Amino acid sequence: MAREFAELTLRDQTVQLPVVVGTEGEVGIDISSLRRDSGAITLDYGFMNTGSCASSITFLDGEQGILRHRGYPIEELAEKLTFIEVAYLLVNGSIPNADEFEEWSSLLNRHSMIHEDMRRFFYYYPEHAHPMAILSAMVVSLSTFYPELSQHRPDEPEEHIDKAATRLISKLRTIAAFSYKKSVGQPFVYPRHDLRYCANFLNMMFSSPIHDYEIRPEIVKALNTLLILHADHEQNCSTATVRLVGSARVNLYAAVASGICALWGPLHGGANQMVIEMLEEIQRGGGNVRTAIERAKSKQNEFRLYGFGHRVYKSYDPRAKIIKRACDDVLKVLNTTDPLLDIAMELEAAALQDPYFVDRQLYPNVDFYSGIIYRAIGIPKEMFTVLFALGRLPGWIAQWKEAREDPKAKIQRPRQVYVGPTLRHLDASVKGGDVVSVEDSGGRVPN
Ligand code: CMC
Image 1 (cartoon, rainbow, N blue to C red):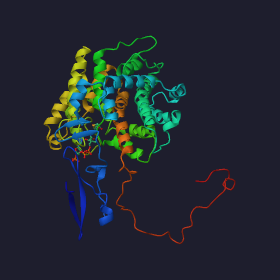
Image 2: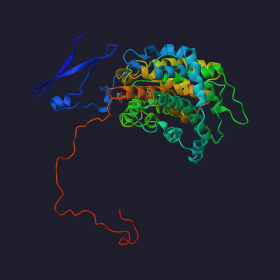
Image 3: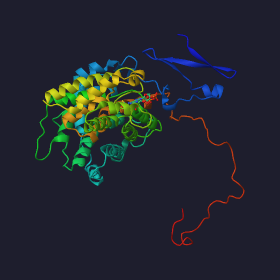
Image 4: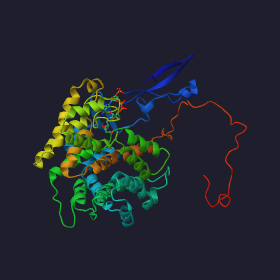
């Protein structure tokens, strides 16, 4: 097929730019030679319209509300598979057969403990340390305990990478549960080899020396669904961070720790905690959703309707649809109600009729209803974003691996348009600070 080009005319010069077409018909204009050929760069605040890679992991069509991993629709994955199978699919490219699944499962069990020295780290965090800070610090610390992957080598044996990936998926769950136990001052509960991934996590979270947690299949199923729905989302802020940091060839642990920090932000994964805090505030104020809507619309403050809006979805987020249904199921199974769910549904209905939200195509996203399920399961709101990180981890790993194996990948280094002062010189009278020794300054260290 003949190569396709786009033409760009700047001042009196026309340059040809190759066109790249994806398997779903998406069109990208490759501008990598633009500066060389025309002297200009492209400028795109927030990367609203800039692709940074070609990827075969996740396909997303924000206009149609489509999300697929390795070609499989998210609806089918959430209904039929466990989180660990989806993690395998993302990281390895195919759904595991029975043998592969058993092997993967037993590897996850084998790597589920954390080094006893690492366990001690938890004791020195302040009482109310946010678990996301602990999570990120612990993940980067793994590179000091498992140094075979702490230096990036282009010829790193594949089995080292696979081992680090498996280790991380298994240990992040243990670290997450330990950070919760630390926050409530309870003894840590160790992982069990007779339990699968989600059941094991719930047991580590909620068992204690005086209480055996009852593992209910419906709750395990709900947690599996939630983690699957968060597993990957192409080049979102935290994944782009993992790829960018990884492009400097840091090890997997360091790249993922950076992703965890990016995810923490309230505009990204931290929104799930913000949603519940917003709903609680509405409840405290008597349950009037209009005040929140008017505040979110006002440009006089920073407040937003958390759990609403998305950079790429301009229709209902397909993940939010599944979560909304799961919410009803979990509350029914637990035979409970949550007044915050009623407020959330009222808020959604009001926003979806308001011209401000309609005109801007703002719909509920994955974070709007997830917190209601976490609350019903007994997970405190400070842990919500940690759960998001647990879910997103296979996506980060798959994307880090893909970037590492891509022959076209380079260190990521955006350019800028400089708008500061033009060349100027120091005045001849400017001398600069005196160099004073510590004794001369009377023992004080000069600034
Ligand atoms: N509440 C009120 N106004 C909003 C909201 C919202 N939640 N989201 C977007 N807008 C407005 C925004 O003020 C802007 O208005 P105007 O055109 O008058 O300036 C317009 O809609 C476009 O928004 P934007 O901020 O330019 O869009 P973006 O693509 O840069 O931001 C977003 C996407 C998700 C950061 C944003 O929608 C937002 O802040 N939402 C609330 C936080 C949230 O729920 N984040 C979780 C996202 S899903 C999980 C994940 O993958 O991270």
